[in-house]
Amino acid sequence: MLIKTDISPIVFPYPEAPAPGTLKEVAPGVLWARFDLPFRLNHVNVYLIEDGDGWMVVDTGIGLDSAKETWEQLFAGPLRGRKLTGVVATHFHPDHVGLVGWLTERFDIPLHMPRTEFLTSLALQHRAFAINRPFYEEHGLGQDVTDLVVTNGHHYLQLMTGLPTQFFQLAMGGRIMIGGRRFDIVTGGGHAPEQAMLYCVEENIFFSADQVLTKISPNISVQPMEPDADPLGQYLASLAQLRDIVSEDALVLPGHHVPFSGLHVRASELAAHHAERCARISDACRTEPRSATDLVPVVFTREMDPHQMGFAFSEVVAHVNCMRNRGELVQFRDADGILRMRSV
Image (cartoon, rainbow, N blue to C red; front, side, top):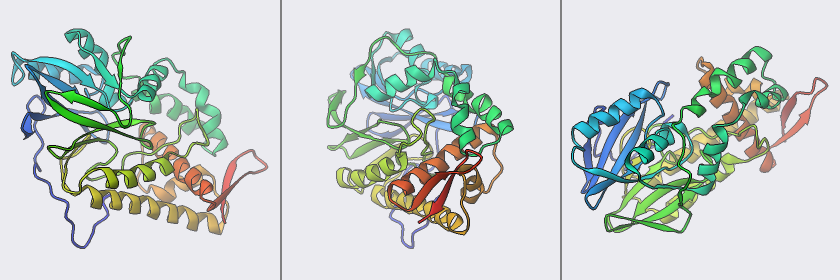
């Protein structure tokens, strides 16, 4: 959802994305590639930063043969004769980290990744998602839908080619040198526990990963393993922090959609978007107590497949938990064992 402003300073210098298997230069020594995804959000951006006689990769694409084929087109075409020097993986989601194992092994190159993201990815590759069933059921999701979510709905989390046995940690306040350029490391929670972003102050280039996207809000979800977490509170704090750290006119290179400038306005739009969702939930819970399942159609009006339903349900719980922490909702368990919310 894009919330319009009367006079928007958001500028899109590269409105046309590169076709899969091709590259587009978006700054000196910075290349943009696009990889297809088999989901409603049907693509992910991958970037390459010139690094001596090779390229440092920022994110990899999903762990599917189709993504490998796109890489092979690049290796045979515009990247022919140039090596990869390393991989920066911004966060654990498989559309960004799915081919880490394949690329690092093929080129014998290091992985740079936040520790929490590395460990989360490692854990999810070996997790039996059926154990999440009580989380969904106590929030009112019926057995049939729960069956779909804990099977088909989470299959994408395991679309991975593995991880190397070692990695180099990216941490808030640190830096990484790539091809003589200094990139400050910024991390933020919400969409992922410790998502990494890179900011080259000298050249005013900001790799925002999925934390700030051009046209949509990233998914902000509560995970069953941490049912009372407040990722939305973390995300809103991260947006405020980015406005303090990153210049308004920086070239923003996001994980999806097209590059833009106007970060501060876009961050404000995203914060307003979530405030509007919280207002809908508050209004609904004022008329009668609601479970998270009851609130899904309040927030999301379109029909959804199991993959989308899993995201939507967990995002509603994220808004509920944030509002509970702010004292706007009270949660209680009804006679049937379902958790319900009431507006304060």
